[in-house]
Length: 80
Image (cartoon, rainbow, N blue to C red):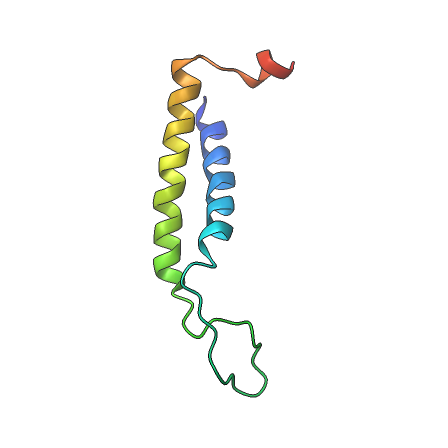
C-alpha cells in the first residue's frame, strides 16, 4: 500500500468510525430550549468523540494494513 492509498483509506475509515461513535453517550435534554432541536444532545462531547474516533480508526487501519501487507493483497489483481 503506497502512502496516498494509506491516507485515503485511513480517512474513509475515520469517517465511518465517526458516524459509529457519534451516538455514544448522547442524551437529549428533558426540556429543550425554544428553537433547539429536540433530538440534539445536551452535551455532545465532540472532542472526546474525535479522539476516540481517531484511535479506533487507527486500530482498524493498522489491522487492514497488516492484512494487505502480510497476504500481499492488491485491488488491481483482485478486480482488474
